[in-house]
Image (cartoon, rainbow, N blue to C red; front, side, top):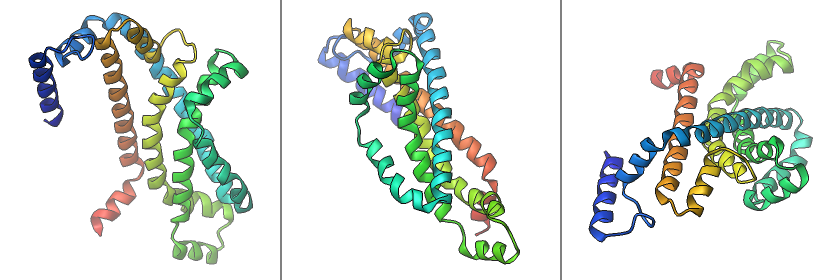
Length: 243
């Protein structure tokens, strides 16, 4: 209802004020362009979906492995963790041209961009989750003769799942943004390419079509992660209801 009200206000203000379409098109014209130009936009959308999912999967793998390594080896965490923070202070827009110089216009620099955007929230969330493990249960399992491997897989990792999914939600939405930025490095297809072409030709309606597509993809990824979380972390939801 809030979005519908926003579109109504937007439509009314744009029409009453006489703002030209190239400056601020109405939502009606944006949606019309989306439907009318769907055949041209669809390949770009599909390319971004494939790129974002591949980059997100790679970021998830690297982020989770990094978190496990830093958790199991605390002496490494003290030296590596500051470097992870520094990696997030480097603007991706500034780093992107360097990646093109170093690795060319292929898939590798695009994957590096998306991975840099995605892995950090997953790593931090997983590390925080590992720290939230119940000391009482941990002490009980040690008393029962559990090995370090059993402690990790049967106690620490399950306790970290709620925090891990919080990081996954952030990374899933960031993956779309990272894919669009990576497409500015010289891709042939993608929402980033579509947006660049539309902006250079003053087709503001197409720029908004690309923006709406990015927002929709981010919300879709977020919703999928929420559904997976509800399926995998059912024990936490049941415990919350019981309390």
